[in-house]
Amino acid sequence: MMDRELAKLLRLISQNKSPEFSGVGIIATDRPNDLPITPLRKEDSSLKLPITGLEECLKIFLKISDVRNRYHDGFHVLVPPFSLIAVSQFFSTPIVPGAIEDYTHGSRFRTALYGSKLPGVVAVGVVSQQYETSIFVDGRRFNPEDYLKG
Image: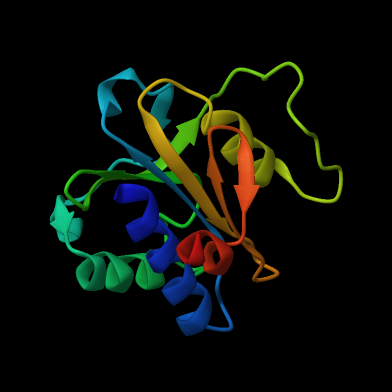
C-alpha cells in the first residue's frame, strides 16, 4: 500500500512542481531506524513533523523541494500509514552488485535504485530536476503511472 501511495504522491509532485523545483527523493519504509541515513540539516520546529496523509505530505514536499528551501537536498522518509517523519537525510546505501546501472542519471537516481533493495524499504521515489519521475521497488525501476496500472 505504501508503494502505491508513494507512486500517487510522486505523480502529484510532478504535476504541481514550481519553476524553482529542485527535485525530490522519498524513501517509504516500515523500518526507519534501520536506514543508513543521517540529517543534512537540523530540523526546526516550523516543520511540525510527523506530517500525515497524502495531501498534507504533498504540500510539504512542494514547499521543501524549492531550491531556496534549506531542506530541499537529500532524501525524505515516509512510514506507515503515510507519515513524513524526517526530511533532508543523507542516504548512504551500499552498492548493489548486479544492479542495472543507468549512466544517464545522477546520484539521487542511483541511490534510489540501490536503496530500494535494503531490508525494510518498501519503495524509493524520485522526481528529478528535469521532471522525470521514477519509483524503485526491490531494485526495479517503474514509471509511477505504469506502476499504478499494474
